[in-house]
Image 1: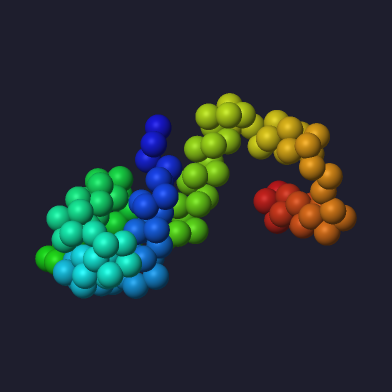
Image 2 (image 1 turned 30 degrees about the horizontal axis):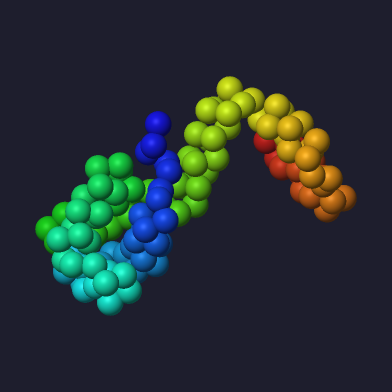
Length: 118
């Protein structure tokens, strides 16, 4: 399940789109040439890959965001939780708390989050 995982260059490319969208695909390809030294075809290949994963859409030469960075990060977290902890947030927190002591502020923040969810 790789939909919510990005390699290093995919992540840098996605960050560029999240920062500048909506952006023309031609302008995006030029920016990739300047930033990464990519040929136009490389930029379009990467764009197609991320469009296929429903992060972005390239319609009539304009690239727009389908999933915000925040939505993507939330989906990444959910995917990790499902794959590693069988979807159990309490199991994740228990494992995390065994390795890293939480500050009083972090504990309060979690309490407020739980209260808002109830």
